[in-house]
Image 1: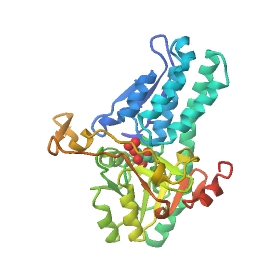
Image 2: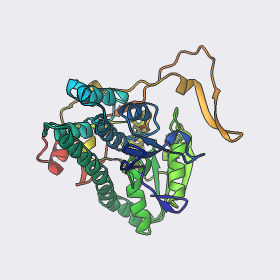
Image 3: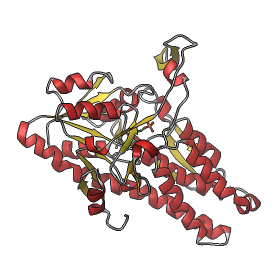
Image 4: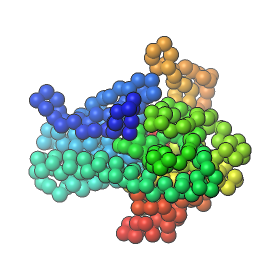
Length: 368
Ligand code: MRU
């Protein structure tokens, strides 16, 4: 999608040359929207740090970045590769952020490709091909999600004119390779000439809404308004929200949805106000093994500093300020689980379905 009118992907592959090893070029999202900084990652360690410290974030982008982490792991010396090093590296990448199941999917695809070969050169070729496939597939899948979600927005628009969408966190192109999941639907609706406006939750504590979604939508010409996380329920009661569209990090086979902390409260408010609550996702976000998301979803606990301090732009740099007692007790769960009963539907690359086993099976009969 667009930054200052030019097209970018959130991650791209840089082949090796005489001076530098192969790498991926990412946007360091910790600096947005204030500075556009690109970084090249070329080792598995750099990939782990980039995922953990959220230089890259969002389930699909974490997955694709993770895949390249294994590609880079094959560049270390032969001994290490033989010594269970690849599996160990895979585990470190998986542990970096445990809630997004896309990482397991992408790592699994690369490991399977590697295991089909015995010699290192063939393994390297297979791993790179798979990682590049995953990168390209993500773009296609996100585009399809947009196409499949368009009808829902069209229906609201035909019924009432301007469509007011509320979203949480960033399920945009910055969280994927291109288009996004939620934003793919928004961009499709925009292209179709639908009059729309997006309420963007700031999304404490990391403020992905305030820092990433507002910037992303504005760069792509979508009318949007930033709100505090607490404002959504009030706006819904006042009739100012027509639909909620959120992304997700893991959906169980029964349709429970793990997404950024605070999503559940939005779903409750939407339910009370009879407003449709849709979740957009690639099928790599479905955990085909898991039932009962409330009991079983691994919820990432992040550092207390994210809650105690707020980051902002001051005197030409990002600064962090303490906003509570330095000794305050803090817990900082990164995600919550919205039970399937509050989800109006899942918007996937194969179409829209109900958030339950029957609905998911109807679109992906080969998986369950
Ligand atoms: O902590 P983040 O920024 O990685 O959380 C991102 C989200 O919760 C997104 O909604 C989710 O990953 C889907 S992105 C298409």
